[in-house]
Length: 164
Image: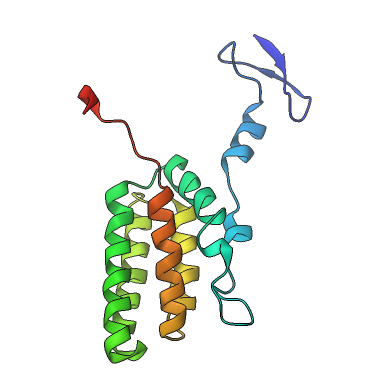
């Protein structure tokens, strides 16, 4: 069935009656550039946390990570969250240099999971960017932890089977 794409206006052969976009426009709409959602800092000039660490951006990122192909699982997200929490706690006791290896391990594991195609590319880009910011000092690591914690809080919960 021939249809006109609602985005670009070109005619295309629709595989299903409900398809409204041509394959090119559909593919480009699925690719999401998250670079605009990557924070450059967690704090304002006075040293106070930015609103974007807690609200808006974490909500958008959580939805992007959950709806990407492959999607990010709750367990995968919580595993990285747990590791960042561990590094934050240790950095507060012993300094940032004592936890850099944990951040490097996270970077390595991100690369491995990306290569196996079990995490979305958007999550890998997010983690690489923020791991680099976090290794600056304890305050930056705290900001990253708070940002990642916000994403965990906003991450969509899948419905359980059996209503329980």
